[in-house]
Length: 104
Image (tube, rainbow, N blue to C red; front, side, top):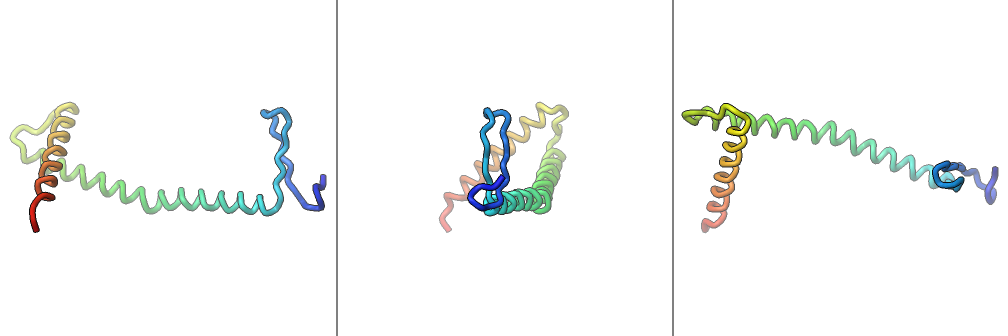
């Protein structure tokens, strides 16, 4: 089927009552470009961002492990660990807030 002398792709959508979508070559190339962009974004997240998140996670776990070892009675249950982490976060926020008000 030819439309105005161009090669087009006709897609029939059965869910929408037989409507047709016409795509010319330019549209197809744009879709291919979008597909490549999405693929590159996913790959960059897997290659660059995931290792950074894993490294940060390991640093946090190591820090919490050191802090727990400093206590006389380290947390033994998940609830105790959550409470200890919340208290640690609050103390770090308070420490940062007090440091930000200092005159340099």
